[in-house]
Image 1 (cartoon, one colour):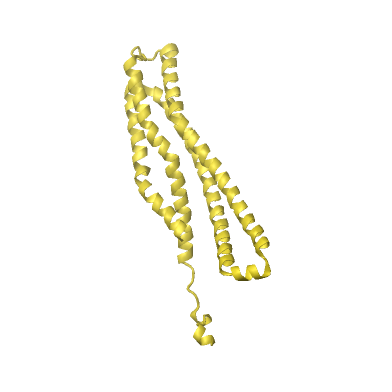
Image 2 (spheres, rainbow, N blue to C red; image 1 turned 180 degrees about the horizontal axis):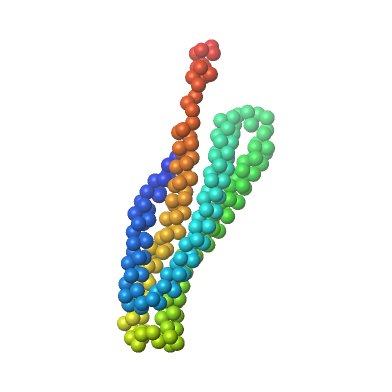
Length: 217
């Protein structure tokens, strides 16, 4: 419960990024359209292609997060049992047996964490490269249109157009870099909310089946 509640607490400050980042990206694309025209569509296509890739990775991370929390619950439950019954373990010399069981649980948990870390690193790498790829495709399309198609005679890549466009691309870098972090945090929060709801929605303990020590005596 404490771990799940902390995951939700970490996700709350990032809620504003869910609407502010897309709005900032949309405004930058609008100003880029005013400066570079339809060439911006090439950069927009790169961003559209990255969205399903990021969605696929997010679903994988969510599945791994559920597995990791289940394994963690089992390990913590076993550790509590070991600590509560430490005298019995010492008396019968069961430490090696329980050590193997705990290491096995921890090994499974580390394997899931490693897979999730690889996926999160892949997402961060993709969105870190996104501003560069978007600017590259936009400038490449702009130059190709200017060189071969010549739709507009004013379609010239001068210093003013290049520097203003690069400034807008740099403004887009921050929200694009924050998106994978926010997605990962929200996935963890969603998993934690489902786990807490499942716990709180369970039936109450039957009091007739619980006896106090005084009653037993």
